[in-house]
Amino acid sequence: QVHLVESGGGSVQAGGSLRLSCVASGDTSGSKCRAWFRQAPGKEREGVAAIFTTGVNPALSTYYVDSVKGRFTITHDNAKNTVHLQMNRLKSEDSGMYYCAAGPQLCGLWSIYNSWGQGTQVTVSS
Image 1 (spheres, one colour):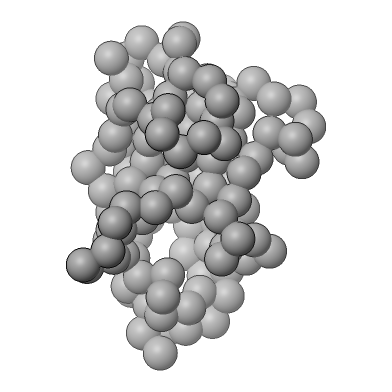
Image 2 (cartoon, rainbow, N blue to C red):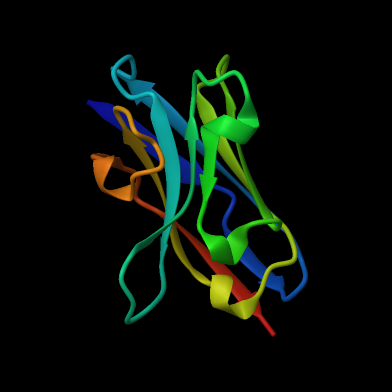
């Protein structure tokens, strides 16, 4: 069982930046994928970014939904078992509850994630 705890959410004006963090603990040996999902009120949860934690080439180990490409960057600190989501040039449509997730493999496939954090709120005002 993987335990995930997010931090870093908050309120920011459009065009601003936020950095989310998620620390993983427990039995993480079988969960090589980490991802960020978000859910806005009245909408389904969607995958935003994912990373293969043991990948060597970030270009081949990270995945992004089209709406955040070029603005968001996902990274993983192996020593601290922490995944970060750097969010730049934020837009009002980026607002929502952001969830950290862990999964076994095929990191770019949003359906593989089976461990979830409790979420952190991001609010972008225009």
